[in-house]
Amino acid sequence: MTLAELLPSVGACGEPPLEEDLWPAGTGFAAGGDLLFAGVAMTQLAARFGTPCQLLDENEVRRRARAFQAALPEAEIAFAGKALPCRAVFRWLSAEGLSVDVCSAGELACALSAGVPAERILFHGNVKTAEDLKAAVSAGVGRIVLDSFDEIEQLGALAIAQPVLIRVIPDVDAHTHPAITTGTAGQKFGFPLGSVPRAVERVLAHPGLRLAGLHCHIGSQVRSVAAYEEAARRMSRLLRALPVRVEQLDLGGGFAAPYLPGERPFDLAGFVQRIRAAVNYECARPPKLTLEPGRSIVANAGVTLYRVITVKPGFVAVDGGMSDNPRPALYGARYTARLVGRHTRAKRRTMTVVGRHCEAGDILAADVQLPEDIHAGDLLAVPVTGAYHHALASNYNLVGRPPLIGVRDGEARTLVRRETEEDLLRRDVG
Ligand SMILES: Cc1ncc(COP(=O)(O)O)c(C=O)c1O
Ligand SMILES: N[C@@H](CCCC[NH3+])C(=O)O
Image 1: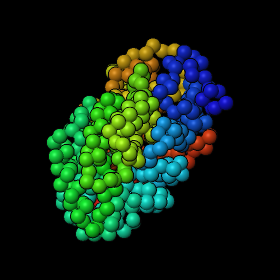
Image 2 (image 1 turned 120 degrees about the vertical axis):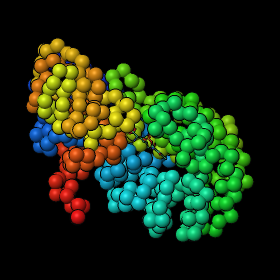
Image 3 (image 1 turned 135 degrees about the vertical axis):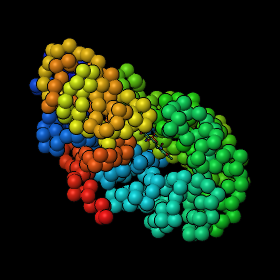
Image 4 (image 1 turned 90 degrees about the vertical axis):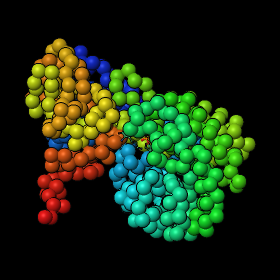
């Protein structure tokens, strides 16, 4: 029996049920209005590690990686490291057999120091500096994803038979937020469809490069399976028309995570069925597929704990904010939040959880239902914070970034420690 099966999903004193698609499977109610996170009470985690703190359920991360592998066993699954660049996570996922995609020398260093084998690393980015390219070549990364004609020359001059993929703009609308739409014509990433034959010709002619395949990535937080199907069809046709046979088709990542009650997880089974059919239809000898999920592996494995500092009519202000989660400000992202650590039968009312920063847009969870007796000192848990939270955190207002805490089977440990004032001042050498 799993932990989740043992845990009640409805609180003892009428707390709203846990929305199971949002929280890690190991989350459940504990005595006194507490919640268990991978076997440890959230109040204990807050007391031990302080707030705000970002929790990550290791088993949930591994379970989601396995779900991708089980859904498409013939494919390579590469974790998009930008979603949560951290050594422990790279180590877990590498041990599960995933590859890792990185897009800077920094992410590459993190993956290498976690022990990810270089041949299982893909190097991305629409701007790769000379330092990035040299780091990738000297590490011997398995594939570099070419993004421009300049890069063909810049990399070709440094490398010897480096396996490369060509990133194509498939001109498919992923129907997601404009800031994270990457596959429509006119985007800055990759080669427009019409220029692909010329790019292929250049790569094939270059002794420094070896064409291993094609790549596309249509965007992030994508729900539309039809958009992936169209991209798979277009990319397969392109592959079929190449003057040489290449073995690989990388369809990128972008699979949506549910953030709010009532939102459904991405339809992975439907996706697999449709892209398999599209690729098989278009290619007599189907290529090896690669997928690059980031968010869908880590987002729902993360929860952030905040301490309430003050309550004003309509607002609950906490000790974190846009420095640990800029996503509401960047994309209008919406979150839910719940009180942890005490029972209350108080009526629920609509409130907005705001942060400590000097901006009106510093909102963590707009219009959420919280008990009207919420007060300073209460603990709030915000789910779905595993992806692009640690990664996007900043030092705005010289607030130290929160720690990342890994929890598994009742054991918690620091993966990335809290940033101190000393850390913050170290670079200020003037
Ligand atoms: C090239 C590439 N691959 C994979 C991803 C991962 O996206 P997501 O975290 O939405 O799965 C991204 C980010 O959007 C990306 O730019
Ligand atoms: N940072 C974005 C995702 C970007 C995907 C990277 N290509 C987010 O938080 O939703």
